[in-house]
Image 1 (tube, rainbow, N blue to C red):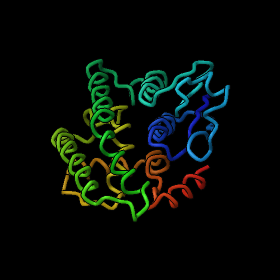
Image 2: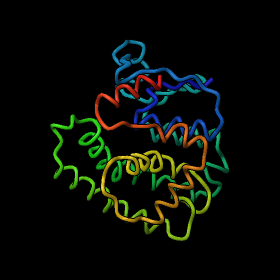
Image 3: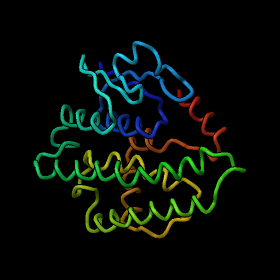
Image 4: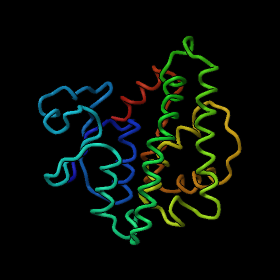
Length: 220
């Protein structure tokens, strides 16, 4: 059986759990990282020398790094669905996975830490606005790309939607000013109709470090 190591509310674990659910894979998940600890053990270090999450063991095959895990699972178990049939569509899905990691998450995670993971008295409103502006500028490229299609690669959900979709939930639930991005809003609505997405990518994030920690423990 597939084994997954990582806490449920980790930004890097969420895409893996969402992919696992979309693929209908039986699995066991082990709470490590964050308030759960466990990354410094010899056993975990032997699997993942980076001592980060997520890590998987797929029938004896150990793999770390979120996007690599999503690709492996989709290739292995999602041929013709999350892993498209056409090589060009696989390449496009891969392109948007890399774009999400290098562009969207780079700024969005900073907004999250500056707003949710920082005490109210130490938040820098100007910094938050600048970071949100950077995220929005990046998302306008995705907004243009989604015109006339339901998902990132055509009209079917693929692995290309997963890192982006996992990230976009934070953009829509954080207390920030957002311009109208109708194509992204429609895409987010389509994702929100999927039970695996609702279960794994739409976890509440809270509004303070204390709430975040409580929610992390509640997701055990």
